[in-house]
Length: 172
Ligand code: ATP
Ligand code: MG
Image (cartoon, rainbow, N blue to C red; front, side):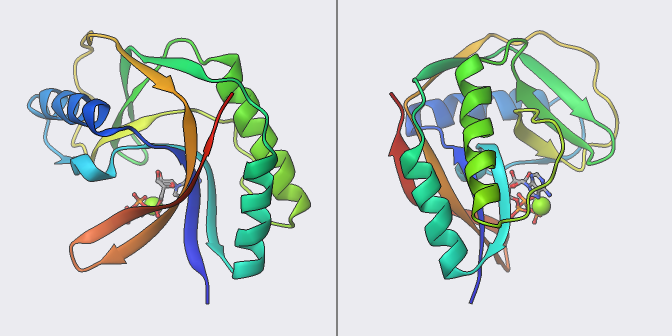
């Protein structure tokens, strides 16, 4: 038995509503599929299908992380043409965010969990299957006070994918 898992930053309800508003705003200007409000998140590390021993090791790695809380300011919208997604991101990646990801990756490698070796580009997917690059538009910055990170299970159902937070850890 395996579970499809990833570490993520998970917005609280108030922030989720703001982000959903941003997605609708941005989505009103292009064709594509807006990400369901409940699914909005930022992936830290994608794990893929893990057995229970690997999941336990990943949770031990998470529990051992020592990382300060930080503020992530979402102040830009970007477009990637290959996955055809529109995303919200930050001009300035907080050092603590990068060190959180580095710490997880290092620990996970020692669990023997294979990871992709691409540079980390934090982004919050707002829209998928976007037809074309939208005109550049400024957004009102959204400040996200990040106090915790989560282990999330990705479950695919008849209505597409949904996510379930299975564990979380406090920063600071
Ligand atoms: P679907 O694949 O059905 O379109 P999804 O991409 O939202 O849905 P998952 O594939 O389970 O769902 O991915 C969960 C999260 O991990 C998403 O944020 C996704 O962008 C990210 N992710 C998936 N695969 C990778 C990967 N190979 N490398 C980095 N991040 C990934
Ligand atoms: Mg996917």
